[in-house]
Length: 536
Ligand code: GLC
Image 1 (cartoon, rainbow, N blue to C red):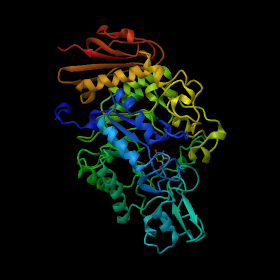
Image 2 (cartoon, rainbow, N blue to C red):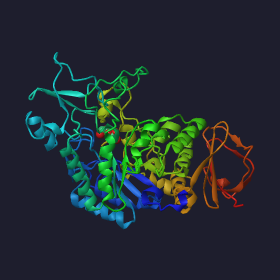
Image 3 (tube, rainbow, N blue to C red):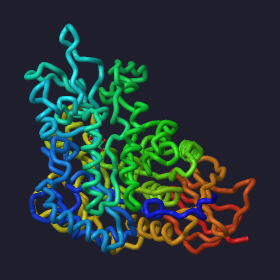
Image 4 (tube, protein in one colour):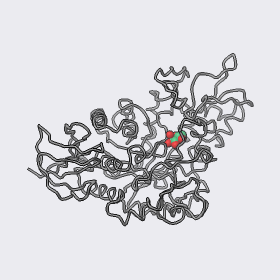
């Protein structure tokens, strides 16, 4: 069946927007963003043309990993507000015909979670087997060589009960034992709790970590490890992640979602393409969208990107819906990776590729990573591995709303500092500037949503040379040619085996819009254009 003939759902047709709630909008003057703050800013999101909002964790948590260490899955952290605030947010999102996606963190809890407190209380506690406890080796050493993503060993010794427990992240984030059916049921009930409230879906944290090798075999050494990398990279996590049994768990989660109407699940998965694809499940019983992080990791190079798009497109299972990401709270911002001018080209790429785009808050105004002095670092990943420049604080700084004190984010001292130039780089200034990156984002999203060729149409690569990335998006009679110059220097597109004629509808150089092009076209450095091709 052709794409355009299928029924498409909201999470296929629309654009997703990620909010890091600590940094979006503070409403009560404590320097940290909150749910009422998000409510105040929903009209910004709506007017950008967003369909669904994903919010990073807002649940009860000691905040060792800023909310990714949860101590109660069914309650809201007071920093963010109350359950009433949440209900109000959900209603306000739905009233604007948008959807709300929550972060689900099933791999690990906080060490303050009552489940873990019980589990660690004694070896014969009924919840002992809810986590991964192991005896020491005969010489007292750790059960195996597994490392924590955040540095050091993944095993923590518990003096009281004389065993180690496993934590893929901080020692304050013990991993749940997903081989235990009681754990499975408890987490599926967490999903049901939020789905019953009307939440539209989940972004599932570290989905590929959920089950570990049942024999806990040693991970092999990574021969390509480089000293500038995180210590975790010293080993290949062959036995601690991406185990075949994980798919049974994902399938169970999917079944819960399918028992409701049009709910969905995104999986956070950092794996090569062929492994990523397995998370769609067999016969569509896996994640709706296994996050595609290709654009975060590959070089900003036309040949590299084009070949990765083709590999990804080619590897998708039947009926598997693609998706694309340029940034998130764990990765350097796109503007800092490729520069201001290319960030516009990147926006055009993200919003014209086939599949659901996810925009990280602030990218729509070209926010950059903010330099955070060493004595202000808050991120445990940065603090645990000093000197490796791994802190994620720079990409988590407060949203820059206007040119008032603290960028309109808070009335007091923000939890992370703002950049020096926020009085120039902010939403308000860009709303008044028709050439701003914000204006470009908004127009790209509108065109995408207006044109079926762009939001549900097919994709076909077009051969191009040098720094040029070229492809077609089409459905029925409608065809768009997208040309992206990934370099700062001018280039020329004159395809040998492909003739075209059309009108430029959006250009990073807006002066060119409305212009007619035929057979060949020259592009300035950092220029991207969307050409509506004439119908035959
Ligand atoms: C995911 C989150 C990241 C967090 C980690 C541990 O990768 O995106 O922010 O630190 O999981 O929960």
